[in-house]
Image (cartoon, rainbow, N blue to C red; front, side):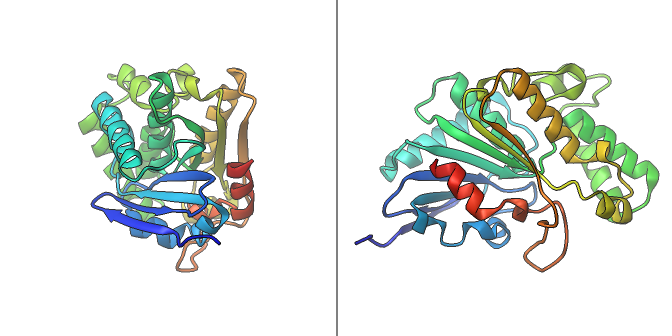
Length: 277
């Protein structure tokens, strides 16, 4: 008989421990999002603990990158939580949506590089802006086009955020190499090279018809383009367990709105099989 799954909550986390844990999934939210958003939008999580997968949802958001002290703080936070609740450190998977995918890569690479007690077996990112230089350039492009009010507002926000935190890429290129999970223009592998020996999944839904209609963007201006380049760089590092997953017609948000930038491009059964394999 399976005992009841255990749910515990803290200021920055919600943990659901599967009674017969076979793996644990640690999830980072998108930039403006929180635990409740992840629970509402990531419908693949529903009852996933019944498959033997524990879930740790985190509130750590509003970051496109991590400082070295952030990496240490997050590592310590996870270790303390795992120890406190006596969670098995076997089969740890880390994932994130949008900017949360950036955090997943940077933290996982750090954990592996430093041989931390927490060693991810796999990571996945969902439509994440992995190249901060391209993110900056694309934001400028959206502002110049002035095609979509929301895109212009987001573009101005991104420019202001990046310039205030790491400068602009022309004058502060080294900052972009250091902070980005991956930089296409320099093929910077520092923040992904330790992922080559674990399982990685890169999800995107490059719905070009939707992007052209609503945002006037072409493929090279999408997160999907950055994700594909990052994937190929990992393959070139001789990664044997990396997957680039382009979905179609899966991008639907909890309110029913069709939107390719969505948690739900992740397919539940495939994810469960990947985690438990």
